[in-house]
Amino acid sequence: MIIDRTLKEKKEDTSLKLFVVLSKAYRTIMEQVEADIQRRGLNLTDFAVLELLYHKGGQPLKNIGEKILLTSGSITYVVNKLEKKSYLKRIPNPDDRRVTFAEITEKGADLLQTIFPGHWERIEEITNGLNVAEKEIAIELLKKLGTSIRTL
Image 1 (tube, rainbow, N blue to C red):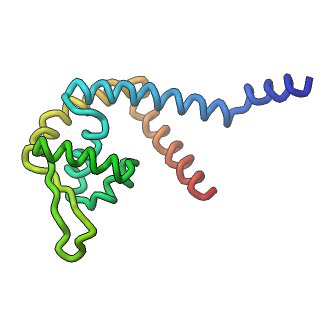
Image 2 (spheres, helix red, strand yellow):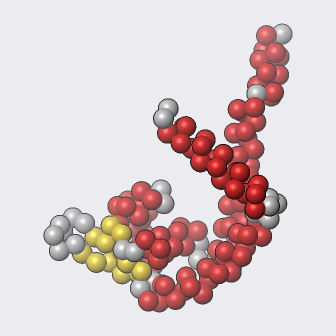
Image 3 (cartoon, rainbow, N blue to C red):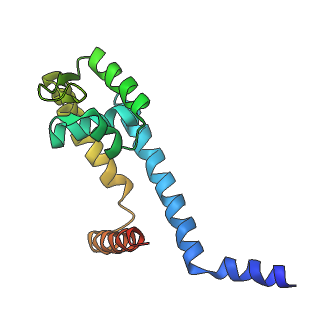
């Protein structure tokens, strides 16, 4: 009986329900985003690296890994692949040989300028289940949740 009541309480727990709903929504959104990126000739990781360099400028390889959550081995693989396609270039740091920067090339920037507008439209389609006011409320609530989690 105690186990049954505990399971029932968990099913009714709004924190657990929020976690499940957020997880499912994230997974569904990411499946759609990844499919869109793949239709445009890139995988999600390649796109994330190029998009970061396009919008934030040259970055140390370590920073790229931290910002898009890649291990150093994975970032080396991705950078090698994108460099081979001439979408980015490595730039050694003249002051510290241990640090190498990655910078988007003109070819990489042209690629993003070509595919990003359509990708942006797709993201708008994916999030059309909410109107503008609801999106703004969701943004504020999720920011609040993220900020409160960081204090744990």
